[in-house]
Length: 359
Image: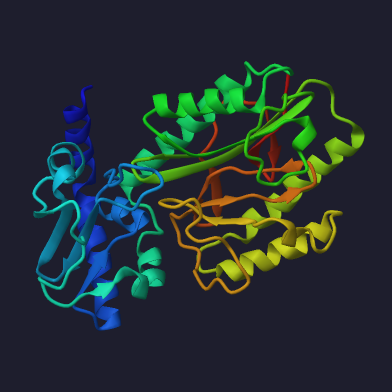
């Protein structure tokens, strides 16, 4: 299927979704007493524009902005990007205004409008519950991410460097049409680091790989472990205890519960399963997922509320241990999205959870 056919298929699948998204934003404006808003963040733009790639550099700001008001939508885009965005990315029929590459994307020429930052929390809530078209795209991305991890990590050798492994993982994600937003690798000598950017160190006897892959604006998150010798009793006990912490977190992640309350459950779960009471302070614990790596992270003051149909990526950690997958909340169920049916698993609370791959 060529890019034009892929785009046409996506448009057909998401026409209903776009109408619902627009209605949600108009509800946010009405609640705030605002007439209009400029959407300017990568997360809000990708969500509102059906996963359109509105960036050129992963490090740079978007090359487009969207004004939403009761009269309609307007996309303002830099002139050097307009033709490509219209042909390959933007939903058809949406008005586009091209401006010079050096001009600001947001202006008052179309009337006063609120900045997105002023409505950040309600807009985040508006995009939390995934609609049918975007859920289909997200589930496919998560499966592809899990499959790429399985394929590339099964080829790992003890003398491979962290950077070489990270390069293979990045290439696999790019081949799937995804941006490797985060690729972290820690070999046996660096497992004490919680955010291990890859180095020239060898993988050694055990390795952790973490990826965040972005496609259609959405980001999948997953962590996998590989080892080349059997685990010690202490290692096996730690990993089982972390899975128990995670199970407690999944049980707490229910529609209507504030993220701060879920975090409180995480805090209590660590000592309940044999970890230090302050273990939760040594690394962030994850949070809502979707159009940002965490949208938002769970924190003691997070007022965001879990929604039915929302994605999450929790990541309980301990010294030399971590568990992480992207999951979907559906009523009282939490379904794992980042799995391919090939990676070794065990059942925890009736839910498949990844084990270490032993080579």
